[in-house]
Image 1: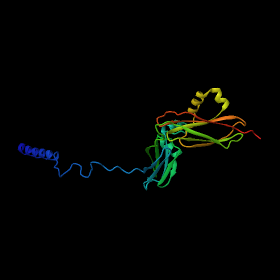
Image 2 (image 1 turned 135 degrees about the vertical axis):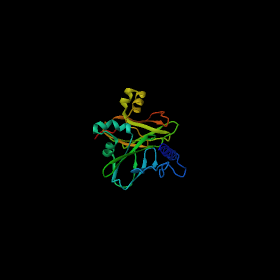
Image 3 (image 1 turned 180 degrees about the vertical axis):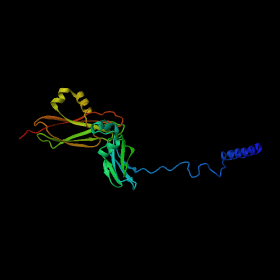
Image 4 (image 1 turned 180 degrees about the horizontal axis):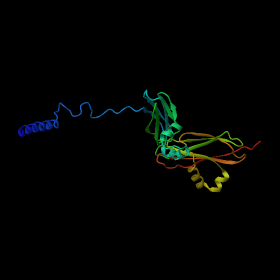
Length: 248
């Protein structure tokens, strides 16, 4: 009986070793690829074209996606507003601020800032769930390494309004412009006027034509502009004087 038990134990042990040493023609996990195929995104995001101030994107949705919202922005500039709207994440922000699309769509974002990273948010809606997809895009660099200059001109001068045009040269990546009265310019001086202009809230990247209203009749003004090149170096401030007409 003891010999019979020993023989049975040896056979079982050999079988265990055989199971732990599979042959090459008998793989451990047949049917499992080394590099499994990644499932397709609910909405495919394809960037078609990029300029300094625009980018065009095409969106392709899967059939099970009912519709989707699209949004593009600099996250750091928008997340500060989340508490104001009660948002806890970009899914809620995209649903509230985004553009609703019901089919494959091509969309162009314009008036963007050159040489800036933007995040594209896509919130895909399914029957019982939503999926947030993100991608990034960099707008093209504007300007060169030479000296920035901005030409300025005025037209349609009236008693309380004027039309101004500021045209940057090819070296200019960004510029500022404003209208300042001659009296105030002389009060604060040239250098302070330059600093005031540099800190102006509005930045421009291409020809800026604007109709200024609410000016004072029969008053001397300057239209001024200053620009930066691609290296962030400021050029000289350009100025042109004008005098509003007397009111009738």
